[in-house]
Image (cartoon, rainbow, N blue to C red):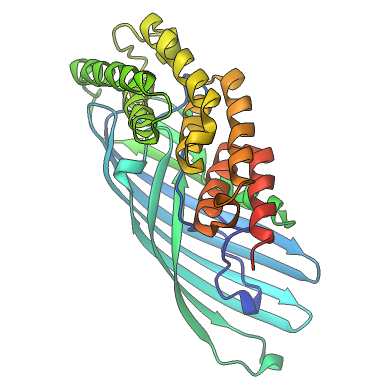
Length: 351
């Protein structure tokens, strides 16, 4: 939840946001294997507690915060509604003195870009900053875009928990900051045992098979590559959500890679994307990388990561700030340190 390497609110005061990742252009899901913890279908209510310290040369920021969230997951395993409310306060000590700040966020869940194992909320964060008296600077009120990530660490059918600061700590470390930030959360599901829509997931599987076959017929087509990646994610969401209650979608008890048809198609899909990587934009190829990580296929993920690094080292992408920032956001969220370093280095070269 802190974007230490991204735009920092009230940077003149050295104030660092403890509880929300400051938004760049891109969104991403988190690091996963083929059977990740996930929210089961139903309505969830949760609480968040934020605490920690960020340290940089001559500057220390300590923050605390609390918040609540609601989340609705459909019977098909899709995130369809929700919101996050979070308030935080910070004290920054530097050579100029002590500054204080508060932030408030009421932001909606981004359903189409969320999964039951990696929920994203996006919206505006309001800041108020009081500067040290020695600077003779008036208070600052600013609104900046922010992201909140809810990625389960442990999950059951009715109770789930996690630490929303996992990608934040990676971003802070990448920015050279020492961090002890945590944003622990727990949530409970309302109602009895959820119902599952196996037929809907099976229909999504059929659409994914078709999308994969269409891409493989034109393996240099960027649009078909993106369509196939999104179609496979839709199936993965349903499988993950059902697994939270130990419910196996027929034919996918061992995940997508355990399904013979999907295993064969996905192997060809990843191989074709890698072989033709110069035909794609880096954002689309990074989405394929994310999918490989989410499915637990590290053998495919490693060369795909190198392929994305190759793309962002070439014009025009090497000078495209928005594309590079999006790649960096995703790499940090998925724990792809090599790609994060490559994107950070490319951004540092831009004027």
